[in-house]
Image (tube, rainbow, N blue to C red; front, side, top):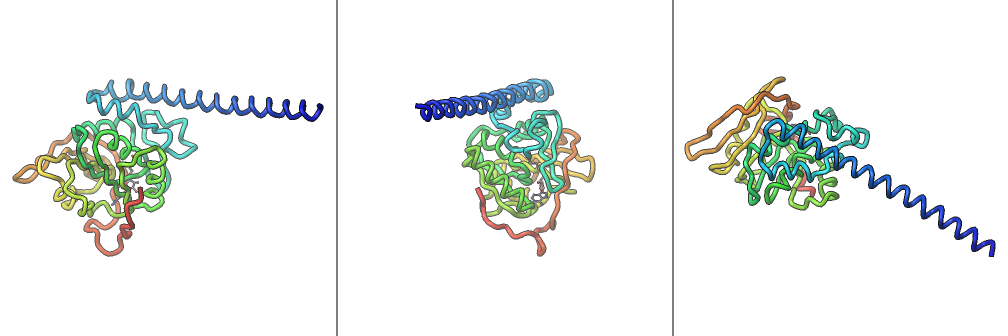
Length: 251
Ligand code: SAH
């Protein structure tokens, strides 16, 4: 009899402990959801991003799931955050503005250069058919690839390699989003843009111009969207010897 009572008491404690954990998890995730909605209203809509699909994507992607554990509480703040190896996840507004600038409608194939955390790739995955994303640092490529699969983004392919080369086997792309800054627009990326395609790219040294490059029948048209500050694009500009080997598509 006593043994039954002890067992029942143990179960009750175990059950309530389980409940406590679950309800605090739920609360945390509700807090993140609320923080994300405020981020969209206060940082993104208020600065003029209007495309409803972009706003919905920014509301949908759990940014806190793509930053390092110790950065989670800051995930919805109005700033870039460190993601390791001296790299950063971009400020939410910049991700939204770049995603809006390439005017996606849903059927496109899009190249991203600079996977980093995978956050911009996840936003693009909400907005188009297929995302190809390249990252120079193997550790970041592997982590982003695993995180994107964990979050259910099966339309993103991550490659460890040098973005100066683009992804010729998958070209042409309807849009290209570059999230590290080269000194000049890499010619291989222009070649891999479809006629009528749009590329957003920060160009310059410490302070950069965010350019919108549109490929036309005759060549390209360029427009400066705003001043930005991205980490530099690194690695051999021509994709020559000494670059990391492209080692498969990961996710
Ligand atoms: N889009 C990312 C932020 C990118 S930070 C996000 O949403 O989190 C820029 C990234 O570009 C860094 O991870 C950096 O390692 C990568 N990078 C720099 N030079 C590169 C190159 N030549 N090819 C591919 N990736 C590059």
